[in-house]
Length: 295
Image (cartoon, rainbow, N blue to C red; front, side, top):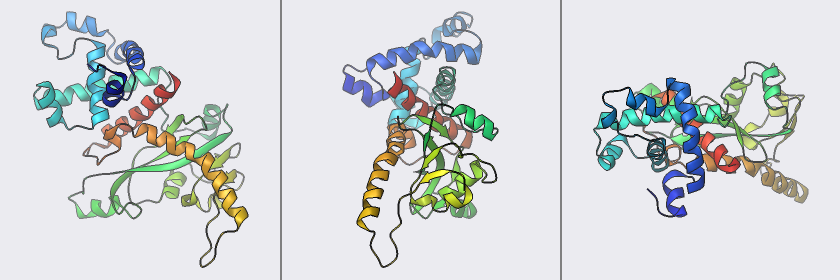
């Protein structure tokens, strides 16, 4: 176990007190998934004495360490003395428990809205929404078609993308499903929130220059977009000042994304090919950031 607060944050992304609190929550997520406590499962199982992890604390540390370090299953199996299959099974199972725990505590970002009414109900207490995309480099696909689909012109590499909605307090409220690197961020936004419906009519929306044309597709929204430098000309001093003010407000979503990417598994090059697992990991890391800033 870590000995100092620096070691706690370096291995789990949380301090000792936060880790202890989250481990106490983990029983709720475990019971929600399996219908019994870990102690009950162990006592009712003949293999109970050989369970790799016999406490919520050890289980939580394992999955947080894996997320924080971004180690492969091979590396985890070496460090813990597990077989490769055991290392993978423990990560997959306890990731789901952590995911469910964050969901039961209303810390997990949502990934879809059934309707505009559902969207407005969710953001009932919010006025300003900050929207941005995040992408992560992935291993180069072997299939030539997949190579074209996942190639991001922005990053000049193969990536996966997600759309993020946060608020001024850097809380991550929404993380979309993952997309291949080829689609533009604005294309993803329109796919998640079809322009024919009035998604953002009641909100102030802050965006970067990647969303030029937002006011045309969502005409009744109040939107703040930075001024784009005209070709061959300079921005006026007023426009530069406006851009600076807007950047200071929009930077909050970058802090949100940076908080989520404290976990190396969503920051470095991804080796995860299972799309469902990848989306669970991204949502869990976002939920851990929400836990970190609220506890």
